[in-house]
Image 1 (tube, rainbow over the protein chains, first blue to last red):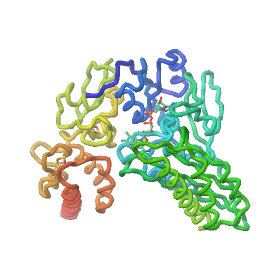
Image 2: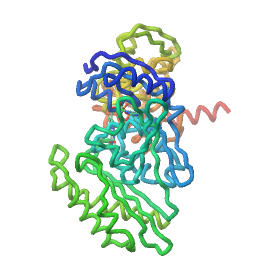
Image 3: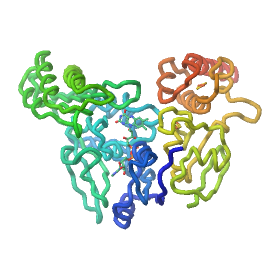
Image 4: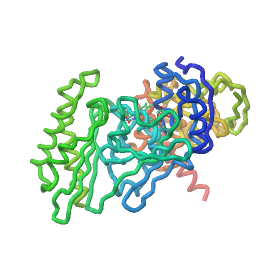
Amino acid sequence: MQVPAPFEYERATSVDQAIGLLERLGSSARLVAGGHSLLPMMKLRLANFEYLIDINDLHGELGYIRRSGDEVRIGAMTRHRELLESDALAQVLPIFRDAERVIADPIVRNRGTLGGSLCQADPSEDLSAVCTTLDASCVIRGPGGTERVVGMEEFHVGPYETAVADNEILTEIRIPVKADKSGSAYAKVERRAGDWAVVSAGAAIWLGADNRITDARVGLAAVGPNTTGIPEISAALRGQEPAEALYELAGAIAARSCDPATDTRGTADYKRHLADELTRRTLRKAVERARS
Amino acid sequence: MQVTVTVNGVEYTKEIEGRLLLVHFLRDTLGLTGTHWGCDTSNCGTCVVWMDGEPVKSCTVLAAMAGGREVRTVEGLANGAELDPIQEGFRQCHGLQCGFCTPGMLMTCRHLLDNNPDPTEGEIREAISGQICRCTGYSSIVRSVRWTAVHEAEAKAAAK
Ligand SMILES: Cc1cc2nc3c(=O)[nH]c(=O)nc-3n(C[C@H](O)[C@H](O)[C@H](O)COP(=O)(O)OP(=O)(O)OC[C@H]3O[C@@H](n4cnc5c(N)ncnc54)[C@H](O)[C@@H]3O)c2cc1C
Ligand code: FES
Ligand code: FES
């Protein structure tokens, strides 16, 4: 029987009250959202905390998907299922639905949250790759109502490590929506249904009035210490007309710039091959969507 | 700590440890052993129950998290001696063999039919994709859900 080591359970009733608890309890406390990453780790005693602060009651405050001007704002407690089912989100950012279809299984998706996914900072986390692809920023709230906004590069400090301090909480993800015609897509290779990625790739593309690429972004998961955006691909694609040869070039850059390790999921060479192939596929799909 | 949970319509208040998992609360504290417990890693789905109407893997939910919420387990499906149609479906179409995965499967499939009364084979397979059955090869589970869907549609038409 796997059970976590003993801890005290507290339930937060508002974001500010949660921050107050975090401040009082310090590094011995941890937030629990969906619990589907944290509790398995605590069962295996890979993590131990004296206090768990349950933030599920903050779903009312932090569970939302909103379009506001040139941004989509998503609350940290928004669950996988809500991201999957939102037609409004799929319309502007179809990459979310692509990714959610292949994250875990429907029952795990009932619990897991966007905030928990990003804060877990697992290098193979699908939503981290999605947010990296989309150049999202993270809103982090601390004591006294102070808020700071950091980009994904800064947010993920290393594997399982984020910019969120012990007395802070991630409240919202903001994703820029540009006026150009845009499209996005996500693809993943896993060993079996609902498994973590062997490698996955996300792509987002923006087309100008002349149908040339005004901007493009590719994010990869499971091929390095963090999910990685590849600026070299963006540079190579900007100003170009979408074409198969261009996707090939991007794929080659992806394969060369990532840093996979050989493990039970596959060899480094195989993963480089996947980074190449999945980059091409997602770019192709993203362009197709941008044009339609 | 003290927790109050409503399980199958009955309110229970118990003294528990913060680390107690919902699956053990149901089985060991309340004696409701219908909910099975298998992999312990949120993969097999045999521990699926509903919390506030949503299927959850109860080996990855703290009992404390269920405080103030409504839980429904396989014991809450039958109405006295009368089986829920999904249980009848599994019986008619051999949806179970050893029965180990069955409580979780029943809870997921009941939820599916409540939200989608006429699911396709693909939709049924997607719904149970987080659950493992080592016996049936899933075909007879899919058949059982289809049987129930048809049966419930007929019953509804007859009631009109
Ligand atoms: C069987 C199984 C299969 C899975 N498959 C996949 C998969 O294929 N792809 C994938 O990407 N994921 C997968 N997951 C992970 C799943 O998506 C998790 O639910 C998710 O990664 C974490 O979300 P959570 O809400 O459960 O976070 P929790 O487990 O509650 O928290 C994770 C961490 O984030 C912190 N945290 C949570 N919310 C906040 C916040 N608002 N502010 C600050 N810190 C916070 C917690 O303190 C903790 O350290 C799988 C999980 C399981 C159990
Ligand atoms: S025991 Fe909970 S999923 Fe296997
Ligand atoms: S009936 Fe035996 S595991 Fe499903």
